[in-house]
Amino acid sequence: MTSLGSTRRTFAPWADENAKPYIRFENVTKRFGDFTAVDNLSLDIYEREFFALLGASGCGKSTLLRMLGGFEQPSEGRILLDGQDLAGIPPYKRPVNMMFQSYALFPHMSVEANIAFGLKQDGMPKPQIAERVAQMLKLVKLEQFAKRKPHQLSGGQRQRVALARSLAKRPKVLLLDEPLGALDKKLREETQFELVDLQQDLGLTFIVVTHDQEEAMTMADRIAIMDKGQVLQVATPPEIYEAPASRFVADFVGSINMFEGDVARNGSEGVTLTDEAGTRLVSSHAPEDIDGHRAWLAIRPEKIRISSKRPEADNVLEGEVWDIAYLGDMTIYNVKLDDGRIVKASSVNSLRRLEDPLTWHDRAFVSFPADAGVVLVR
Image (tube, rainbow, N blue to C red):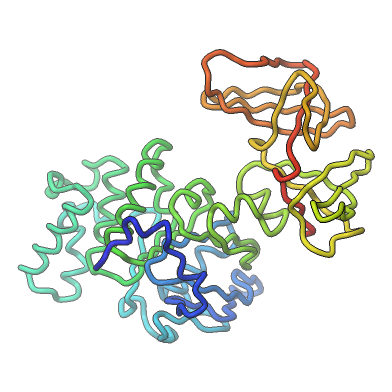
């Protein structure tokens, strides 16, 4: 199977109107008694895509994954895989495998025995099992740990065993339910890139469920933001971050500043937002027909510059440095405006010495250009 490799940057079948979805959720609803976990949801996922379902606990993302795996059945709607309706097909007959957060390794079995388990259940001949297990061990770089038991492995190694076992049966689709949740931060970051490389090498379709926004942004080709059983936005990581469709999405992914006010069109160059304090802010990114609407200007902290002297900029606000968080690679400032609002600005620490140093209770200016934020109406 051809690897995506260097073609990943141009991989965008969702942008091709002639491309057919590989997985399709059609008006899917799932109820548990009076509770609706998934609410009339429709979603298309394409072959060889690394797709992330991102949302808080209880938003329906794991339920959606379990329905695709066959562990739950939709109350309404259809789920199609490569054009086939999956209704009535049990999990073990679907070309799908699921890797659970707990890994669910057999503690009394060796690494190679854990990987071979599903193949033995399928009745594969022993020589082929041995060959496949060897391939999987090499794939996840655990050849020297083949005879060890799970308790003799680190958390990252156990995660790789679970991944190898999930891939051993060569599913068309691999489902990953919070796969990195048990790992420490540094190992989790390393494993994210390993999963991306592995997915590209195998050319499979990966669908990952996570509540970790950085995890989704790092690994996925596209992300579906979920809340209360519905998909609020489906887009690439840059689109989700730079052009959120709503305040919920903007607030859920990354840190954000929100300025609320009434909007008026300001010629062809953008709009002016006037808040209750009379502050006027301009933006060049706004929907059409927005005149007179109540709206919110959303802007990321890293788009905002902080300084002790008043700068020349499209938007300038003044306040007092209220809080400072030094994170090594960057410093985060909370600036309390004179009307009581808090604006968060972040500054990259690119030099060892500080330029224009600011400290607690200093007067400061926060500024940003008109094209730095986006105006949202919902």
